[in-house]
Image (cartoon, rainbow, N blue to C red; front, side, top):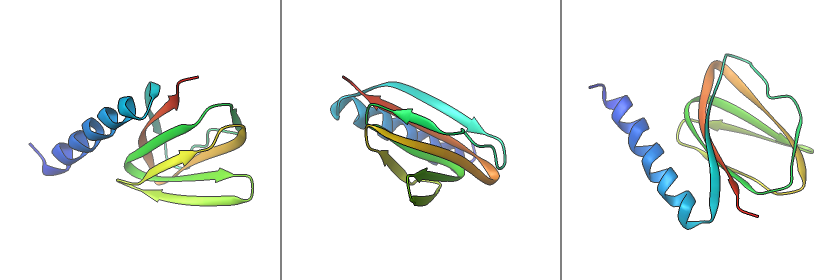
Length: 99
């Protein structure tokens, strides 16, 4: 088996286990094609995420974060945000905090 597959799998398992301890649920896995954008969304809950492959650009208000493979991200509650994949697309996990 390719070492990158094992590495991605182990990152995902460790991240998923940490979510439960931190009070996050409703986990999801997303794939964005190259340069695909989520559009603008509003979140009323905290969101934690992990980029598994590719690059993801997260924009919140006037700030922009460029995230690469292995980077975690946090979206605070009560904010508008957008996510856009880089040149090679992006695979990422995310979860919302329990109410």
